[in-house]
Figure 1 (spheres, rainbow, N blue to C red):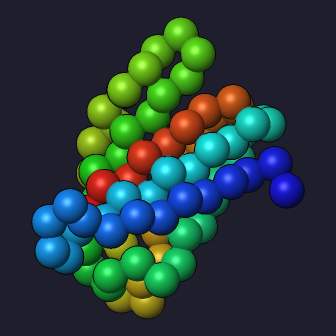
Figure 2: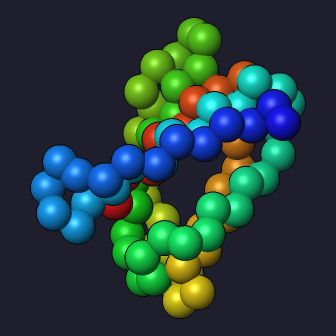
Length: 79
């Protein structure tokens, strides 16, 4: 219950964002229900470092993406 996720669509047709708020320790997170084969951009914000571009990752053929999250961080996925 310490991990919160918000998903939005737009502003352009076919685009989305996923906001992952991790208020506890490090770990891995798997998001499902994403468009299969979609390339997503990963951006991390921490207390002392905002908007770190971590590059991109590919959603697998089942619509899942697993990422590592750092303690007390906010991760944004843009697809």
